[in-house]
Amino acid sequence: MKKIAVLGGSNSKSSINKKLAVYASSFLEGIEIDILDLNDYSLPIYHFDHEEENGIPQIAKDLSAKLKTYDGFIVSLAEHNGTYTVFFKNIIDWLSRTDYNIWNKKPMLLLSTSPGERGAANVMKLGQTFFPRVGAEISGSFSFPSFHDHFKDGKIIHEDLLKALEKEIRNFENSL
Ligand SMILES: Cc1cc2nc3c(=O)[nH]c(=O)nc-3n(C[C@H](O)[C@H](O)[C@H](O)COP(=O)(O)O)c2cc1C
Image 1 (cartoon, rainbow, N blue to C red):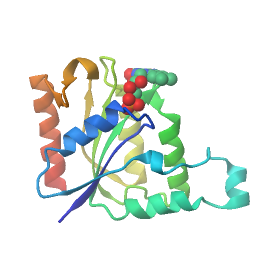
Image 2: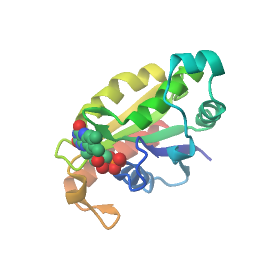
Image 3: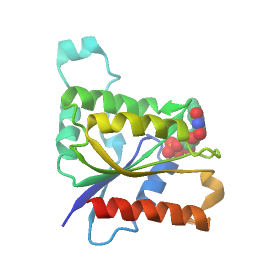
Image 4: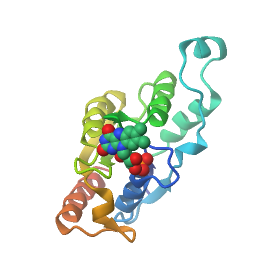
């Protein structure tokens, strides 16, 4: 059975991005879903001198090795001031020092959301540009706008947005 990892680019315990990624994964059938909590991978802020003196933290190596075990990824990016959260970018920085091929040339459904009507479109653009360079085969992407207006009781209540997401989920499923 294929196995995918599902994660939000946020350290918030109530992350709306994690909720969206998990929700998207619920449409997949016959695929093992592993929901990652990146808070389990507590890393120091990347610092060149730290790496020189101490090497790459074992936690980064463990996460890098874990990512190699998946057939695909659903990642939803949180946006802080037009870019990745510092927490997520830091993990990406450490992973890139461990193995630049972070996503192991596997399919990725790339999502983003925010309370705003652009749905974190800035960070989405960054992910679309950068993630393929670090091994993501992006099968589709979707910025979900105004999360709190359109996502209620654990599901998307806006018909057209749901249809758009479902289309991307099918593309992702077919690329696995
Ligand atoms: C420091 C900070 C900066 C933010 N900047 C943006 C932004 O640039 N664009 C945006 O759409 N939302 C922004 N937000 C709102 C976030 O989208 C919102 O907090 C969202 O819940 C973050 O996703 P998460 O719940 O998955 O962590 C910002 C929030 C914080 C705390």
